[in-house]
Amino acid sequence: MRLELNLTPLEKHCTIPINYQYPLSGAIYQILANSSPEYANWLHNQGYSIDGVKALKFFVFSRLFISEMEQKGNTLIAHNFKPCKFYISSPIWEDFIQNFVIGSINKKQITIASHQAVGHFEITSVQALPKPDFPFCNGECQPGRFLCLSPVVVSNRGKEEFPGKAPHYIRPEEPEFPEAIRQNLLHKFILLYGHEPENQELSFSWDKDYIEHYGGYQSKKISKLITIREGSNTQETQIKAFLAPFYLSGSEELIYTAYECGIGEKNSLGFGMIQEENQQH
Image: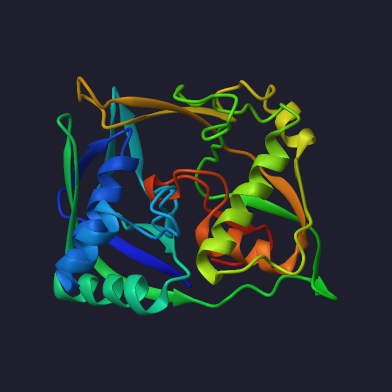
């Protein structure tokens, strides 16, 4: 299920860090804790897994959509109390979605903060969005154009030929990128449902006309360098991610998994939320 969270800044010039993904993820856990501290703590520290490794959180959220915004140095400023919003999705209805909604009602504020900036927001509404009606035929999704609501990242982490090494973030033009997307979705589906999908086919390709129009894969419009745990001497991490439309077709099961869980990695840190182009939010 997908939710739309509508916010109003509580300061006329509300300032948040430009790398707000990690602080916003923390705010999401705080919302869950407002309903169930036990679940929020378990999800943050353990998460869902089969064998105790490769645990997943099974939620994904979008970038912030701010009506009137200014970038100033390493901060973003939301001006004049103008509304903003973000989207969050999860396939875990009973635990995640219910606790998130209840937590939003129990405490109608969130804080997005780092050592650089602190922004306070009122939660004005939480709205459930209808499940999208993708064009399926015999269990196959027909080719469609999708948008990234947050940047996408995949890596070769966990491959046997790279034991103990830092992950190599796969560039979107590398040939293994589409298969990495498919394998990641297969892992999510199996962890969610305990079995493999009947149809495991998935075709992924970037919109190359869009990418060429904006100057190629390494242009600032497409390539995003996002810092996680910014300011931490030991845990600060920079992640190379990509933001561009793409085409997707294939397994109905995998495409709905992509919609609810996100594509690629680090979904619970604000990476990989997607939306079909014609879907209205």
